[in-house]
Image 1 (tube, helix red, strand yellow):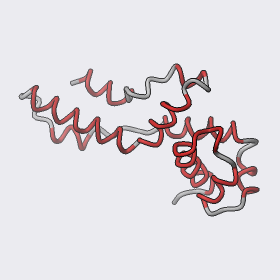
Image 2 (cartoon, helix red, strand yellow; image 1 turned 120 degrees about the vertical axis):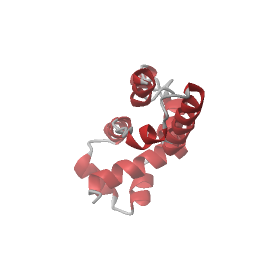
Image 3 (cartoon, one colour; image 1 turned 90 degrees about the horizontal axis):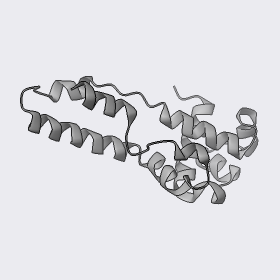
Image 4 (cartoon, one colour; image 1 turned 180 degrees about the vertical axis):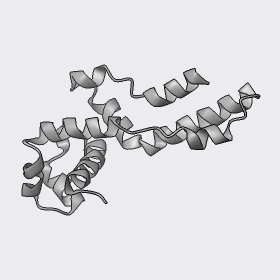
Length: 130
């Protein structure tokens, strides 16, 4: 079950992704979450804290390799690399809101400059372990 905090973070991710940090307001995020703006301030001190928490939440995505592992032969490297690359592309599209934020906000937030948004660390580890 999604908590109110999770709902706020999910809504913030969508709003920041579409409008950018500067053009997003707490009201926009509250409207997206279908809650009162004051509710957001029960969980987050200000918009910056909400933004940082949103990025952190999205970066904590956990990778379950079992569906991918079941599709791999571990015999035909070309076929397996094709399967892994398709899976990688699917993961990028599943996380497109986060990708948009990284692309649009990297110049405004130093902490984003150190993130390799285009290399999902867990997928990279899966490639290496193969």
